[in-house]
Amino acid sequence: MQYQSTRDKSISVSSADAIKTGLSAEGGLFVPESFPSVNLDEIEDLAGKTYQERAYFVPRR
Image 1 (cartoon, rainbow, N blue to C red):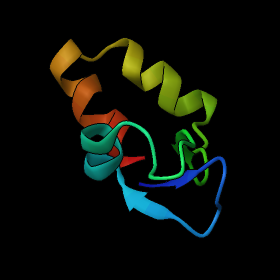
Image 2: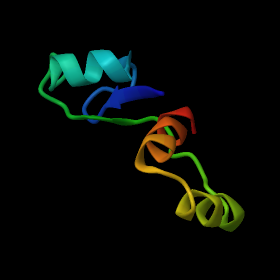
Image 3: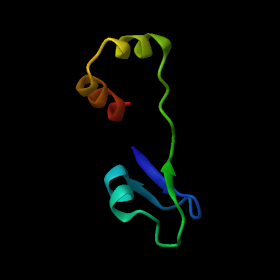
Image 4: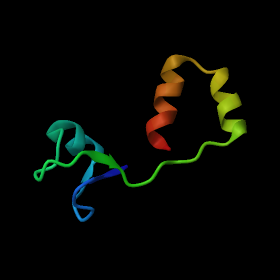
C-alpha cells in the first residue's frame, strides 16, 4: 500500500517508509492513497478466524 502526503500529493511512499518517517518532509501527514474494500462475505469469514489469520488478511487488502 502506498501513502501520500496531505500537503504534496506528488510525494508517495511505502507503508514501511511512512511509519519510519512519521511526517513527510514538508510537514504533511501520510495517508493511504486508496482504501481497500471488504465485502460482507469476507467480513463474515474473518469472524471465524484467529487473530493471527485476521492479521495476515488485513495488510494484503
